[in-house]
Image 1 (tube, rainbow, N blue to C red):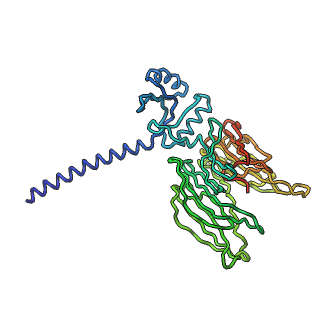
Image 2: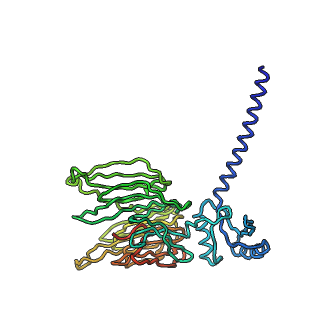
Length: 414
């Protein structure tokens, strides 16, 4: 009896190990399949056509390509394996910008998918209401991406990989006695992979709303309302979402307006250290001027790269940390004491060369988006609200997005 039980136990362990191995292999295969994105350079009716063009493109790209047969018995010429549509699109557009290819698509397992790098989201009006648009870098055309009846988009916050976005909307808003009254605020989550937008939270009515990424995987919404019983008390709810749109904790704070004043919207802190931790800038304010020093931490050297009478309002870095983008603004009063419209500068700095590449001026540069080797930034002045698309590595202005009613990277002027 004991021998039989022993044999059964050994057999069970043997079968368990076989099943575990098979399951692990299937999981690994499935995982590898899911993360495989490629750049489609051409699709052909016959393999001979693909073979003929393959060496020509390989010589241009200085890299090997592969030919794969589709379920429709066509042959695709593919380049690279990438972990995301964004990464594949970024590489493809860089190749396109160097005039090595004339067209491309991003595919996953041979099937076309949304190229979230080439298609960049922004805010503009659709049928009179602020909505989400998509701008295509190849065609330089814009199209409506998301709009909802009676919903006005007041902020758009893209995830770092552009796979998703948080859309903050209101039914309407009005200004009275120094307050901006917000009606029926709601938060939506746009999943670009499956092209679906879901409502995450209904915030209600309030007097202040602002959104921000606290970190690369934590999105927050600060929503303030007046206490219905004691209107000198402001109640602020802070909603926290993860990168997949899941609501976490809701923090509550109270402010006594008479004692503490109305809670102000925090300004964005300029990022002084580059992502590569190789460069760091510091702002020395002296005699009414901002002196920007750039330090090379590896070489233990520092140089003065910018001197301006304007205030440093924001600072961003390129992903590799080789370029620094400074946004400045001026006072709303000129030298004669006359109130003037607020404008500023956008200063592009090559950190390796320790020199200024370009200075844009004459507008308010309120928002900027570092997008691969491109910089998208708002240009606003009086009735103008447009978006510039700039290639900072080539010092080339690619386009200016202009739509009737204005447009903006994150929002429209209120």
